[in-house]
Amino acid sequence: MATATLTAGAPPVRPAVPDTISTRRVIAFLAMVFGMFMAILDIQIVSASLSEIQAGLSASSDEIPWVQTAYLIAEVVMIPLSGFLSRMLSTRVLFTISAAGFTAASALAATATNIDQMIVYRAVQGFIGGGMIPSVFAAAFTIFPPSRRAVVSPMIGLVATLAPTIGPTVGGYISHAMSWHWLFLVNVVPGILVTTAAWTLIDFDKPNLKLFSKFDWWGLAGMAALLGCMEYVLEEGPNNDWLQDQGVFICAIVMTIGGVLFFWRAFTAEEPIVDLKAFTNINFAFGSLFSFVIGIGLYGLTYLYPVYLGRIRGYDSMMIGEALFVSGLAMFFTAPISGILSNKMDPRLMMMVGFFGFATGTWWMTHLTADWDFYELLIPQILRGCSMMLCMVPINNIALGTLPPERLKNASGLFNLTRNLGGAVGLALINTVLIDRNAFHYARLSEHVQWGSEAAQTKLQNMTLNFEQTPGLDATSAAISKLSGMVQQQAALLSFMDVFFMLTVLFATLGLFTMLIRKPAAAGGGGGGGH
Image (cartoon, rainbow, N blue to C red; front, side, top):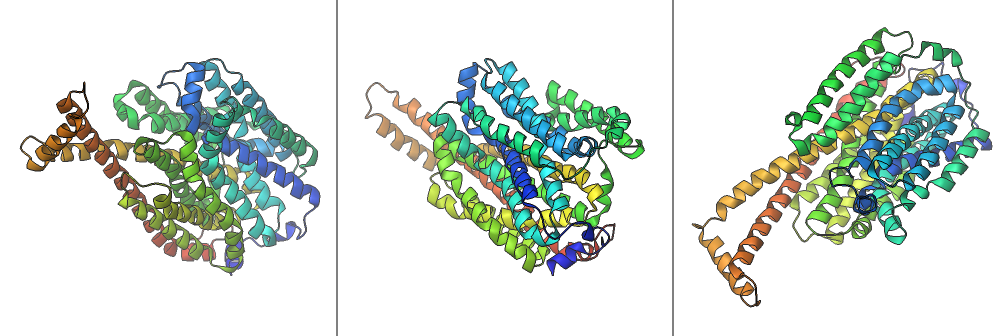
């Protein structure tokens, strides 16, 4: 039923894909999937080990987040550009260059001796590696017949969601067991194998070098300014009071100018750098919207759980990784189930179950306390992992399953971009809410911990008596400091609850919203279609 629903509307396209696929192409595709896994994993692999890298490079606390930010900004620019490059150079050449460049930049990052070198190498790694991600999505829907989608779609969905989820865990283990250099060196041998396999085995399409003469340099400049500056504004804005910060303000202006230039070229250039026509396909437009929200959930929760465990529980990177591996396991075991269900269930129903499951997990977290540990976080994490896979497979199929092959490469870049942009917007939103609500709750709680409050004075007296047992300690100061710390912790906890509640509302609303796409999904084959 689901397959019929999604493939209606593009009859000339389907017979072009043979129902059997050669072993050579399967191996080539698996090599591509592994390359994509490395590229996505490397966004988050450093997140749990930033303090070790900071010490190794003698960087300041303001500089070290750029090890992650430089990679993200560069990758976000490359992902939509890869569609044009893939048509011009062919999947084989683009993927081989991407894999080889990513491997070389990984090796260089391990040799960095200061933070400036590291930022440059990470930017190169993110930019070149970003070409691997959309190529895999495009190849999956180009070379595999619809009958194989139940196997292929969960595989790429699993990689796209599992890699960022287990990134901090893998990174924590590697930097604990060896050193932070191995976070990058670990890519070298697999990278060489993927590069060799890509060059030898990929034969899906032919290059069209005539496109080079039509390359839209102004469009590229506009897109780089728009996406690069947007990523910077979203990363730095929450912590720097947004436009009050000079750097954020300048980037916001550059982003706006870049946006105007990019959209002007997208609609007037002979061969635009990114073809936005894919959004006229109603299925693709809705799929991209859902992918954007999945990005908020995927990257937002991958960020929130470690922050809670580090800030409230005082865990180190290894302990955080051990506490959070459950989500990855849940995704791994749900992937084949969601593949089977995608052939038997209405994709909108699958998405609804996934979104409501996600909302249930985040709602569970609104009851957070300061002593929640592995067992209390177990069910929310299982719900998060299972729901992510239940959403991801039908979203991939709805967005890319009905597009004609010539549109797939560009559309795949746009589709992956929406997930990354969702993550960037989600993190900025989450950070802003955490900061604002923390200040709000601290002010409210402080009102109750005044000299006029009987309960507060009793608590303070009891704590002072306890501290008086310790010789050489100013008991009153220690008690006031302890009480202030308790208020800070409660304010932080309440702000976490607010964020989880906000995410609950978002995903529950989206669960209801899936009902509204019944008509377009049923009618939305290759073209527009309306409500």
